Length: 64
Image (cartoon, rainbow, N blue to C red; front, side, top):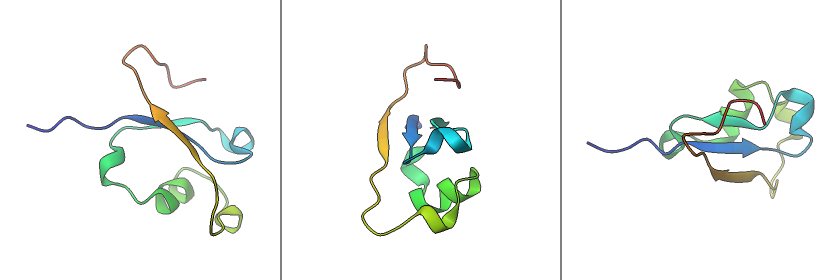
């Protein structure tokens, strides 16, 4: 049984759209699509966008 890879994801100016957010299974997503699904404006996603990503610990909450 494989373990889900949970990570925090934080795009530029993400705080304006409720980020950072935990992605429960980052091994199975396309970051661009996930950001849009989570409410990040698609027009802000450009080639070379730098998105902060770090591992979620069991003690992390959904609110940074």
